[in-house]
Length: 140
Length: 126
Image (cartoon, rainbow over all chains, first blue to last red; front, side, top):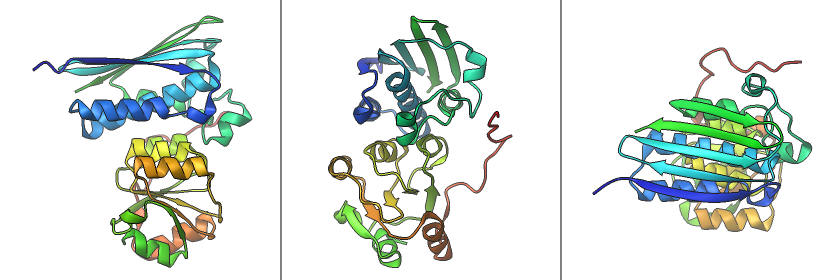
């Protein structure tokens, strides 16, 4: 049986009440497809931070997870302001978050750094006033 | 310690997951920053926090926390409790502050899920 599996979820910007909902569902689905342990955990954490980013900064976005025999690739595409300085955004502690994000326990400039730490390969492509694409790859 | 002993020690109210009070807890992670919980908490640890929004339950589910222990006497909104029952995450609430809560648990054999941060640590630019 092939272990290939793909799933996509839309995420609405500014919907703070539901932050994390999609990631919890993705974790449940991945678990159901035999992903366990550290790999499951890293995929879930990277997805959660990415979901919070869409809700915090973009108008809308999409989380796509593709599982193959050797990897989990997670692509997060959003329509939003884009990132002006990617190098700076990657730094721990750098944040442009507002109070609403901070009240939720996020916005301390750890997000992209956490995502990178969970990934075997991580790429950010961003265009100002168009949006951002995060490409996360985790080897199985 | 099992969750029931933790609840007794801290005079804590059990707000969700009554049926899991026999679960054993050996480690903990205290934080009000959920990104730090995502980054550092380990499976099986109890999350100790002053936040009460539903995010804490989703985060606990993502990192496989054994339970959430809310400090400073805060009582979470109904959405948080409902979600905790749904995702099977016990929630306790104690009136002790974060420092006292952590100290009392440590004195009773619960240790941090990690001791300290590997690598250079966080740099917060001015």
